[in-house]
Length: 200
Image (tube, rainbow, N blue to C red; front, side, top):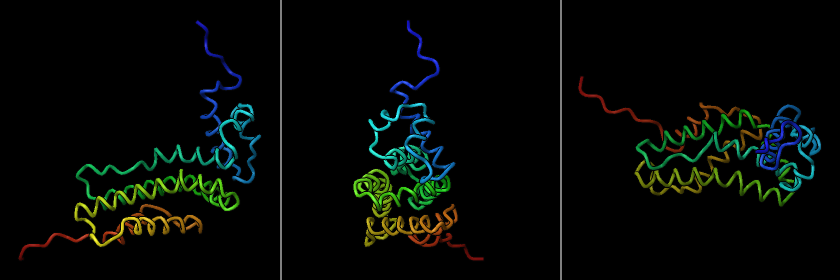
């Protein structure tokens, strides 16, 4: 039996993972604008042509790396359980904001890149923005079905407002944390009401 190669360039099955990890590491350390395709390929130990066989641009590679990592931070909220939708929304937003605390600078750079490249803008929206919007829209629709949110609310519109709020903060380097997640959730669902007390 032939042993797997030790050292040298990663085999094809490993090349994509190596390139994504190298891209995120370098962009976080140096900043997006100071990292070249050549530097990423060298850091990953992968031929530059191998990178271009998978991604058209540096932005596409970095987006894939961020998207893959986002899946572990901000998976779709489970809508088939008994937890209140307001709790699911707050938890989801807190998880998203934790991810942005790590990759906020990377995402700001990708947003800037999207303004210069229409094809990448479409890719960024379809792969990263739209899935998060749909997750929140589905959660809000479930809240309406369960009577936790008024039936005259538009899930799509409210989801857009939620995302507009935190994208605005991200672009302006505002604070995105658990406290902001609670504030957004309270604005959507209203303040928590205490159960009525019995007569004293």
